[in-house]
Image 1 (spheres, rainbow, N blue to C red):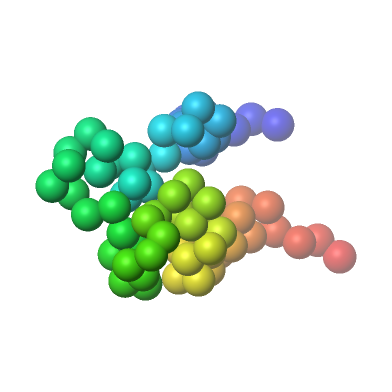
Image 2 (image 1 turned 60 degrees about the vertical axis):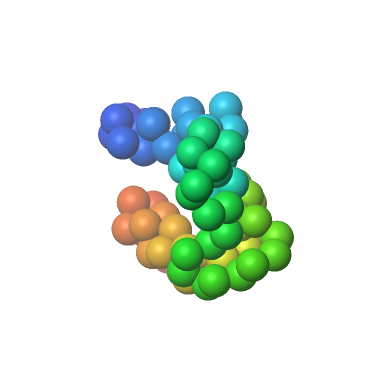
Length: 74
């Protein structure tokens, strides 16, 4: 299976814990808020898990992207 470069970039970042989740960006730029901007949860901070699964809005976006590239064939 040939994986497009942007998709490989996301997988690489996920494997190495370098996704641009707010908590990761906050470590680099302390003035950047570590909390999710979409769901406005103040606790806990936006981790990689929240970035991909726990945030309902982002989960729906990831699900849409997944079904676009891997459609269900019945």
